[in-house]
Length: 478
Image (cartoon, rainbow, N blue to C red):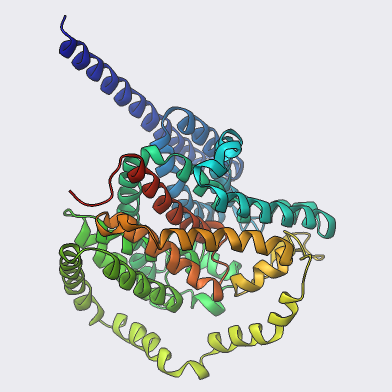
């Protein structure tokens, strides 16, 4: 047998093995879905325990056997788990502990194996920003154990540690950048299509499970009225803010894709994004578009302009239909009258009251400081701070915020210098998503939970791309 035949047989064997592993992965994922569905149709209350446990088991299997499928599974757990939780709540009653929402965190925490395995060599690989972020969070964790109760500290640790942990996993697997890039593009394309379509449905119909959540969570003051055409869209996500962050990232990523699904995804994606009335994310999307257009070659710029025009042709006719047009127009008009806007007043007042107090907090209050136990109900409740900057200094203090912010600033400074964005539109989009998300920290705690996953994750993907192209000696488009 010749050497060429041996190489061909080896290629076929490797390809068959990869396809077999992929099939096994999909079988496990569908098994998780079917088991969850069976529990929901049967003893639905059991799903509150079964769902997180089986999600963790599925994640461990995918992480070990099929890391690409693990990546997509992780994102979809963030996208879908809040809706599954609302469906269960409607059947068996409100759960103030929201214990099912721990599932996405457990799935992400599987990557702690990556941290332990690669941390000793992380500095040599260029992972210093992640080391600094981990140091800041670990400091906040220790201070939290001193000043706060253990359960709120543990709950807060999930929010703070998950984003840099997952981002570190993406970064150290830079050799698989092309596969990771393709998976993320595909995942967010389907996310924009499905989550966007459900968002439009939610606005028009106001499903019973969404109305129930809106009433029980007491967010009707900020998320609208529990009636058709009265709610701000949050789709399958937990609230308007996370939905805005996800859709902002997904819509920017659409510029890096082509295919027949782009235009229906754009139509429902942009319409639901506008119906969310998330002005901060609108501004983040615009900043992202400007950054993408300014970083790619002229040829790619023309393609992006064409895509934007076609997307506008898909969305604008929908915005002429009442009541879509009235709601979106009134929200846009608020930009010209911010001094009378209540949301703007609340955030300005929060800065006036708390900025000097936060900056004078050297040690910090530790993780869990915004989670308090309600003495009447015995449940832990979160007190929202509408500023990532204030949240960092209140929680981490100067001693923790310096390494955490230092790591984030170091990442941003690094990715702004990457020349790969000139020929790889995904690098340009990932960088724009990460930096625009960081710019929104002034207004919200976008470094936590799903918003933090997007912030840290896409910056990490830009770093991974840079290392991949450097390793292969690719510095310009051939």
